Image (cartoon, rainbow, N blue to C red):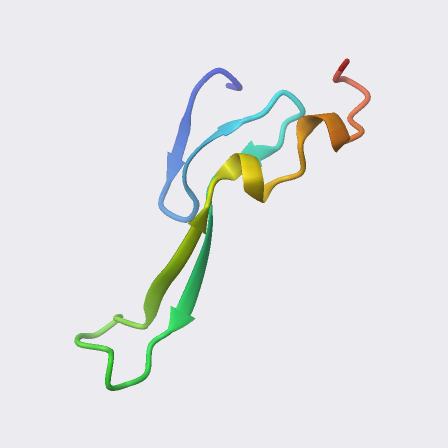
Amino acid sequence: MKRMPTDDDAFGPGRVREDGRKIHPAYLFEVKSPAESQREWDYYKLISTVGGEEAFRPLSEGGCPLIRT
């Protein structure tokens, strides 16, 4: 399973790292004002995306006893 890439509706594309942690992008959204919303369920505006490698603690700092660095 760790060799297969992942892709889900909630977190987007990613992978399962050697220590079992799911690495995926992190998203920052802003809630739209009622004037900005143009249709039903149009509530959020994407402000920025942080890549998975930046969003999660590095493997070397994780402390998993199964990982030999």
